Image (cartoon, rainbow, N blue to C red; front, side, top):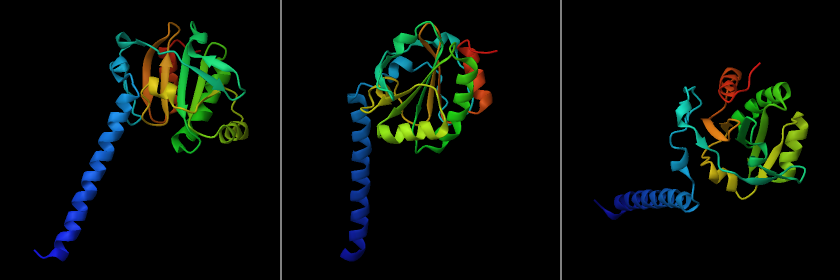
Length: 195
């Protein structure tokens, strides 16, 4: 093998090593951020949005957080103890999020004040978030998580992710991916929200 044919092979191997180091660094950083993945191990996760029957015996207490809403007020999850809560992690640039938010708005209009919806946007410019919410006529509370702190508490790895919390403050379902209306209604029923 001559030097010319060996150089591309060497470059490819170096690229593979760098990519592996970068991925391992991300994994290590997530553990340094203290993601409590173990605390929600037994809570159902769908991975790709398919419906998985939740194990109601596997409920875990939801970690409390305090974030600022779009209107500037401080909001704590524990403020809503006694009410079923849907916490939805989303982004304006996320197509499944944009499809799902109108469904959540309809349920919020139908079931509020019995259902609390907290839509959490992490890392985006507040003006971008505000414009998107206003343009679409969403009225549920939107919280800003500029430092991804609440996202880290729940171990969020993809958008959208929805966390369904019962009135006792326990996570009963953690759903990753865009929800259909049927799936959303099924999981709302599990936390005690239905007609």
